[in-house]
Length: 615
Ligand SMILES: *[C@@H]1O[C@H](CO)[C@@H](O)[C@H](O)[C@H]1NC(C)=O
Ligand SMILES: *[C@@H]1O[C@H](CO)[C@@H](O)[C@H](O)[C@H]1NC(C)=O
Ligand SMILES: *[C@@H]1O[C@H](CO)[C@@H](O)[C@H](O)[C@H]1NC(C)=O
Ligand SMILES: *[C@@H]1O[C@H](CO)[C@@H](O)[C@H](O)[C@H]1NC(C)=O
Ligand SMILES: *[C@@H]1O[C@H](CO)[C@@H](O)[C@H](O)[C@H]1NC(C)=O
Ligand SMILES: *[C@@H]1O[C@H](CO)[C@@H](O)[C@H](O)[C@H]1NC(C)=O
Ligand SMILES: *[C@@H]1O[C@H](CO)[C@@H](O)[C@H](O)[C@H]1NC(C)=O
Ligand SMILES: *[C@@H]1O[C@H](CO)[C@@H](O)[C@H](O)[C@H]1NC(C)=O
Ligand SMILES: *[C@@H]1O[C@H](CO)[C@@H](O)[C@H](O)[C@H]1NC(C)=O
Ligand SMILES: *[C@@H]1O[C@H](CO)[C@@H](O)[C@H](O)[C@H]1NC(C)=O
Ligand SMILES: [Cu+2]
Image (cartoon, rainbow, N blue to C red):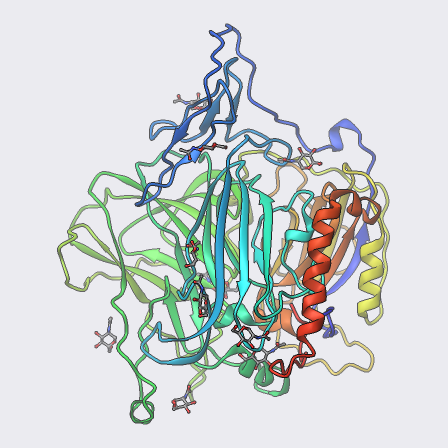
């Protein structure tokens, strides 16, 4: 098993680990079940539930709620906040407490084939691409709120195992489907398959990616949308927009640079929007036969007067993006899988692993037919190299085109909106979840680990069990550079996008200043909530979640290099209850995959050498 192997002391330490609260009313999460019972009873209708087309750009994908007998769809472009309405007027809508309730959807089966292929998304041949279904990005997986999803993954990589993580999916009671090798399952060996089975209890946009070492950086990622209600109306939705940085070397080669290089982590070479970028080859590379032609830029079209939903996903390895469309404002309506109260901006900072739903209105004065869609690298969060004058060498930010005249082939001539480029999460006070949480106070606090934290300590911390679903767990994560004994700190301070599996978490405090013992003013009343938050450079983060999902959940930095070198820990949540969630059949599957993996390790083709944390 590839357990977390290294812990680079000095990157982050977990100081306080606070636990259990009694399940008293005001500490419990606000319950907001199916919406208000109707007053006047309607005619009981025992027809099968509705089948309808959610807002997707093309194709005949439909939501299928035939199992919600007697229900109908209440979702329309005039009211996006309602989803399904029952015979007695009860609803699944934007206010439904989706942590406890989900509609009965249908079963959707997908297959993904993992293999190697040469990729040239920016006009340069990357020889070590690893992809889903021979495409980069991988196929778009679509489902509807409450669907049961089954995805069969077959590994045709010659020299690597793999496991696939469904980013942000809560895996409520399905720990073994979380796809973290060494934590929730063994890697799927070459030529073996594993079927992930889970329920879509949340809705919104996310991505799936390999969690086996650095594989996702080499191409193993794709978008995933779960259709459901939205806090704001719009007319049409566009395909997801994936933003990423890209390297011309395999991340497995680059990792050695990260570990052994005093100049810091390896540098990325291009930025890509939906798998398309434009690298300018130098003569030497052309002669060596490394170059092809850059693909046409990503483009999308609007009709004047309409409102469009864009689904933005940051799939970066090491860079934070600022997304903007020239001369257009965006209304931000969802962060990760959490619908929020809408607010307007002319740009949006998207950290690695984070996602936003934004609505763009086509109502600006139409001075041009075409506008640039930009992906700017945030200052201080760049994975790109610097020139001799220490200025970052940053790829062209004009990566996409918004067209009002679809037949146009001209490049836009518009200028960028004005905004700051600092690397920080969206302002804390802006992210107001529609479904409110009231975070309960922890009943007891415990301070620990003032010394050098070791992996063993972290596991122990995690086993500090909160044993009821109502218990709130608080984590304080500091990025302060401590002089740890005996460990020379090679820590290059930067902001770390921290991602928790198995839960959305509330952000009680996100601070740029260093943590000192003492009182901290935290927000308990509907704080921002998501599954990735930026730990500010040199500052700290306090997060809280309820111990309502037994499992061993990973908490890690989503900068691939950092996770690979150990910025990760496991949270053992209600260990005694975990086995109750896993049926003998599912346990059998897990055992089978492990057996095959152990066999594969003996195969002459394998060349397996674990050189990183494995995740
Ligand atoms: C939209 O639906 C929500 C949830 O059912 C309801 O509360 C709201 O009144 C509706 N709004 C309009 C304008 O119909
Ligand atoms: C999550 O699991 C708990 C415990 O089994 C259950 O009570 C709850 O209804 C589940 N949530 C959803 C949305 O299915
Ligand atoms: C809808 O789902 C049900 C089962 O949930 C299935 O029997 C039926 O064939 C599906 N209908 C369509 C049109 O996909
Ligand atoms: C992936 O490819 C397989 C084999 O061609 C196909 O059956 C499957 O539908 C594809 N998966 C997706 C999600 O498109
Ligand atoms: C899966 O990928 C392998 C390797 O590229 C290929 O040989 C095989 O045909 C693919 N299978 C499917 C079902 O797409
Ligand atoms: C994964 O495959 C790459 C080649 O693409 C190889 O360099 C690396 O050693 C392999 N690593 C593991 C841990 O399997
Ligand atoms: C995987 O299958 C291919 C094609 O059948 C075979 O050539 C290869 O040896 C197999 N690899 C392993 C590790 O079993
Ligand atoms: C360029 O192509 C040559 C010949 O295929 C190859 O050896 C070299 O590794 C390539 N360079 C990079 C940076 O991929
Ligand atoms: C890529 O950049 C080059 C040089 O700036 C430019 O000539 C070319 O048109 C660009 N290609 C695309 C597809 O945008
Ligand atoms: C993606 O996340 C990384 C890591 O936080 C960040 O450096 C990058 O700017 C983010 N990209 C966008 C578009 O926000
Ligand atoms: Cu990090």
